[in-house]
Image (cartoon, rainbow, N blue to C red; front, side):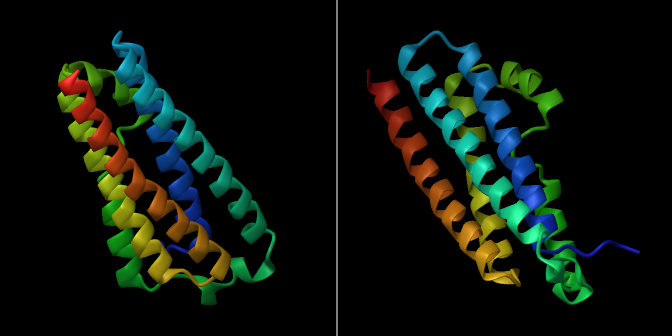
Length: 166
């Protein structure tokens, strides 16, 4: 039997994604000498860290609520399967794979493309989690972070164009 997801599990998954994003950007930061590329990856690392803190705070608040552990707060089976499929795409590479993948990608352009794809996947996931959310607090944090990830896509694209034109 497949497990059903809930707001708590959605937040736990989101926390893991933010950890992976931080790790990915940290490895990318360490790879490059270019000051503009380093500045971009440093900013993204810091923002992923802030997102993780936000998710952790909300996770702790919702986990403390007895209702959050009730079966009535589980997402339905189809929603759980869909969200699991989104998560299984890994959004960002797992920590043990990040450095290898960055080295394989080799160029700043390829790393940026992967980063934009990962941010887009995050947007999709957070949007779906917000739609399914049973707790208004969780819904609000998913929507807030969806907006942050949308800003990341714009920021990454803009900064990359600046780096290319420098």
